[in-house]
Length: 337
Image 1 (cartoon, one colour):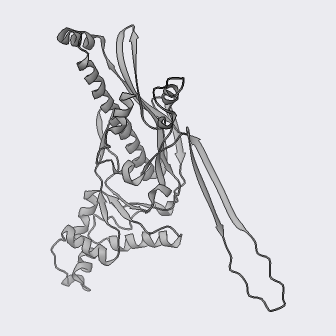
Image 2 (cartoon, helix red, strand yellow):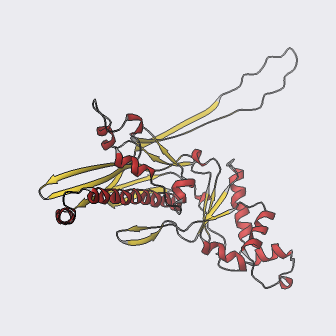
């Protein structure tokens, strides 16, 4: 109970924007994810002549749902037999150092699990799918059916000064408007993609009010000047994303640097990072003297154990969870470089 309470109080790294603000976290007393799509059309009423019969209308409504199991993830860290002997030799029977070591391992568990979910959220944004390929023996794919129109490619790479990022972005926003999606609230991108706007001809002409390119000043724009242009066209504000995680000892960027992501408001209706209930939490919440109450079962859980051959003490961080997309056509993930 103490280890789990400590784990859940550890703040998420500030760079992990996807699981903090793009795919907001929700904890449920479930082991499955579920999505529902429902709606209705209402046709206009018809005029009629006095003393004529009121016409019958038709009901047009639909509802579809999908569900699947939330996959399990986690890791163990062991205090080896040799470490225990060295701790005992240096501190006598004092167990404070051993307990401190276990709490250090809990911090590693939390960061590892949150890092994997952040990487999963990036995976979903890139191609619209949650994919595991022989990860610890598990292969899994959930296709969220993001339309191809919501994953466009810029007509000309934005690294080319002759490209027109303003027209590209306005066209993508117009597509969202045409299908009834909400207006984007935020852009998530890399500092590298943003940097190309400074020397872009369309942005410079818009800032200086030039009609003839030959009369446009050659100076590149500052970030403040770029944002002036964006404000003039009512384009959403930009948030830089730079998070990296380590996979099998090697650093990996969560998102490629060539993406321009238009994110909708009220994001909990669009997508979420869903945590369910682990088997470990169910065990700890059972019995007449449970370690945790049933209401606290969802979410990340920490357990510890001992084995005698070889003599080891270990801690385990466990969770079940994944990113889930409820509305697959409410955002834009554009490749711009």
